[in-house]
Each structure stands twice: as structure tokens, then as C-alpha cells.
Length: 289
Image (cartoon, rainbow, N blue to C red; front, side):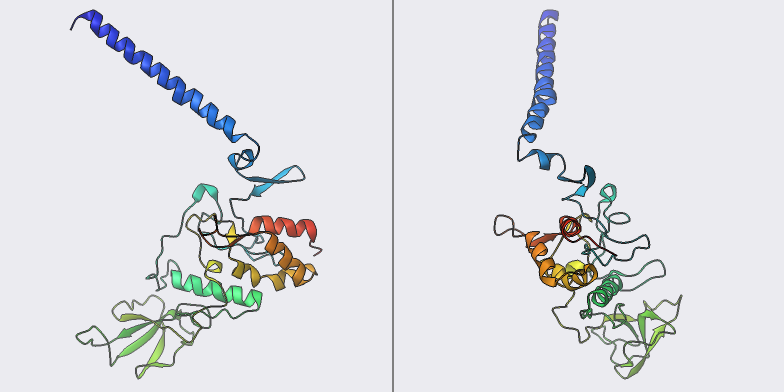
């Protein structure tokens, strides 16, 4: 290949590089930015930020925890769903817990997902004055799980257990069941390993449709979801109205105003934006406590 041909090829490549750099690195980003600043689009492009009295108070796309310094729910506000993002709704740590339905036995290091859900359900029920009972949960808000120890049959079942332990209820707790298959149920001794037994979650007599909705006890996949279900909002209305000294009807009207339907009429579920709802509460009915 002659030198002149080599030079022409490389000059053509350099020109293509410069042209594409200008188009994709300058023209396209500037065009997208300009379009995003058009009326009706600029708010979303800037992060759907919310300002009150000239101060940035949040984003309508990112939830917040309405709790005090000790992590207790502030009763004058609607409560968000739990968050697994950092210490709660941390945009830099957006994540889920990565725990699944088989995580049912507590360990010294942490509570199981089942016990976490049971505990949250009881706390929400007590706070909102509804039944916090949930299937596979004890009345005290821990996972109702037994380790059934003894000889197993061909199907792996233990028909005549030698020992039955409520693995999530540490002694001296009184087990949620007194007997199981003819054997007395014992509380779990700290430090003991009961994995040798067959682990059996107990359904219990709680209703299939719990009064405390699922989004009140489980985190979203991102940990940042600012929405709750209308069902979770509904059980909070009476408390918020009582604490703020207003009527339940006034609170319900605000909830309805901040409830969005399914996207395009068929995608997702109806939802209530907790951040915007609580801001509207403070504007319309300031807390006097």
C-alpha cells in the first residue's frame, strides 16, 4: 500500500471520528436537554423536585420515612412502606433485601423475612387499630415455625416427633402452640441449632386477606417507592384525623386527591403518593401538637 493511500484512509477515519463526536457528544445531548426544558417536560427532567417556601423538600419520585429520631412513626403523618435502601429511602443505596419466602428461621445475626413481616404487621395493626394478624405469624408478631425432630418416613415426614421446637420464640417465651402431633412444643434455647429437624411453617387461623396490606410490611424492589396502596392509606385515615383534630372525611378527600389510577388505564395498580399527601396535609391542616 502506498503512503498516500494510507494517509487518505486515516484522514477519512479521523474526519468520521470528529463528525460523530460532534453529533453524538455535543449536538445530540444539547438537543435532548433543550427538548427536556420545554413546558410540561422540564419538571420531570429536573427530577420532579418539590419546593415549599423556596426550599427543596423532596421529590415526588422518591419516598421518605416519616419517623422521629428514634425511628418511631410520627402519628400526624401517613406512613410510607418499609424501605431496604440504606437506612431507608437512601437514593445512593437503592436496593431490595434479596430475601425470599423461604427465609423463615431467625438467626442470632438477624431476623428472618417472615418474622420481620410478622413484626411489622403487628406494629401497623396496633398503631392503626386494626387486626394485625397474618398467616404464618404468631400473635406476638414472630414467624410461626416449628422444627420437628424425630425419625422420618419415606416421604421425609415426622409422624411421631421426639422433640418439637418453636424456633423463632426464644426461652422463656411461651410457644404459640402447646402440642404438635402429640409432642409438647418447646421454646428455642439461644445458641442451639434445630436445623436437624424438619422445618414446618404453621398457617394459623388468620384470615387469608389480612387487614394490614402487603405493601405495609414489605419493601419495594428499589427501596425508593413513594407510593402506598389505597388500602394502606385507608387504614391510616382515622389516626391522622384524630391526631390532627380534623374529620376523617377531610383526610379522605386529600387521599382521593393524591390517588393515581392505573397507568394508561391498565398498567400497575392505583397508588397514593405519600410525600405529596403529607405535604398537602401540612398546608391544609397544620399539626398543632
